[in-house]
Each structure stands twice: as structure tokens, then as C-alpha cells.
Length: 343
Image (tube, rainbow, N blue to C red; front, top):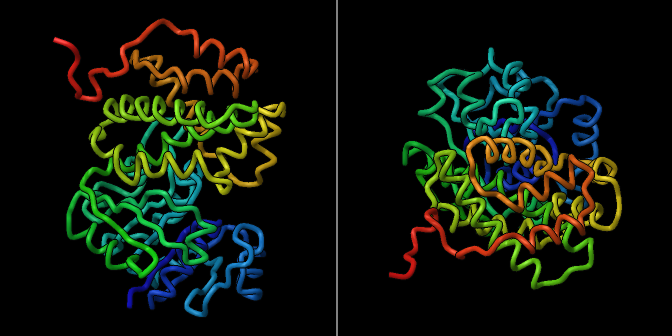
């Protein structure tokens, strides 16, 4: 039995707490709001973020960060991307090199463009690299909480750390694969949210399956381009943390990124649509920083640029789609795919 502290009591942190407790581990679930944690402890349900899912006795909700971290061997980070640095700064005095750290959030830090492993290392120190893993893949909290079969990827610099994450999380309904490419796995989880927002906008405009297929396919090409630029292995994007997460996030009613996009496509102002979701829409932040990196480095990211124009430049979605479709003629493959052209 492992002792696990989960920092973040939102839908994903709660779902992972349920999974780990059912695996027989002792789980401490930390949340920032004391009244929310107290409600979870009394009701044995996270009625705000993960209703209907019963929280087993093996989960202890705590608002005392020092106590939660101090008793744990494993530290699971299930925080919104932009909250990671301030929470880790506060938690830093309680985190030591004896802790294993697993990040489960999907995003980039907007002020720096850093991947979340880079943020963690900058705040806590270089020792983190040898004790760090990222867990990512097509895994909606609502389904994991209900025990729906799910497969994800654990990435770490050292194979024994990735295997440790496998041992911690693997269950009859939760399969974990390993991968040495931390950058690629992190970037797949972050970049797909931009495409999910864009797909949602297309559905909100009334477009159909042809459009979704085009956005997924060309969106994956953009993910590979940017992923390679930011240090990921292009092959990683064909796996669970890339293509797998892209498919589920673009196609599912559970996806807050897709839902926000649909509301925008239906005519809501982007800010109102994002606010109405009630939880963090990571793609909106990721789009800002990725569009900036793409323009500064000359990487061709037309879907990302179009999404940015709708979100932050008040451009009409129909006009933006028309401009996308009427871009100059292109060869489908490029240097990032590694596929040959004509002789």
C-alpha cells in the first residue's frame, strides 16, 4: 500500500483519488477551499466537480497542505496549469527528494511557455527530474470515476519511475503504458485542447463529420510541428497522449474545451462561453502561448491561428473558417511527418 497525496480536488483529482483508493492505497485529497473539502468529507461525494461518484473510505479529504504532503510518498499534481507554480511555491517547504511527483494536468504556463515539468523543476529544484513522471492520455474524469475502461501513458526520464506509476495506478479498468518522452507526452495533452476548442466551434456553427475529420487530421499535423519544436518526439503524438487524447477531447460531450467551442460557434462571446463552463478551459490559455511561439518561430499553425483570432481578436468564426479553407494550395505531407514525396 502506498501513501498518496493528491494536490487538487477538482474532477480529475477526485477521480484519481477514487481509483487509487480502490487499488488499496491510502489517499489524502488536498483542496484549496476548506468548505469544499469539508463538504467532500461529509457527503463522500464531490458534488460540484464529480457528482454521483461515491468517494471510498480510503480517501481522506484535507485542507491542511503540510499534513497532506508530509504523510505521503507519492505526490500527484492535479491542478490547473496556471495554478501549478503558485501552489508548488506554497507547497515547496513540505516537498522533499523522498517524494515521487506525478503531474496529471494538461497545459502550458502562459507567462513563460514552459511545459509543466519545467515549471515543477524551476520551483522545486533539479532533483525533481529523477523523481518525476507525467500521466496523460484519453481519460475523462467522469468515466474514470465510474470505472469505465481507460488507457493512458506514464512518461518519465527513468524507466523504474514510469514502472512505479504503472504499479500505482494499474487496475482492471485502468491500463497504463510507459514512454520515455516526457516532453512529447506533456505537449500532446496540452496542444490537443486547441484543436478541441476549434472542433467545438465548428460543431457550434452547424458543420458535420467531414469538418471534424479535417480538423482532427490537420490539427494532429500542427501538434507534431509544434511538439517537435518544443522537444517532443514526433512518434509520441501517434500514441495515447497525442492522437488518443485528441480523439476523445474533440469528440466527447465530457470535454469542456469542445463544449466551450460549441457555445462560441453558436454565437456566445468567447469570454462568456469560457466563464459558463464553470471549470478551467485549458485550451484557451494554451492557444495564447502556442500562437505566440508559432508566430515568433515561423511554425505554420493555421488552425491555432484561427482559434486565436476567434478567442482574442473578436473575429467572426464563419469568416475565419472561410479563410482557412481558401489558404494557398499545399502538399499534405511535410518535413515533420517524415514521409517521402515524389521523386
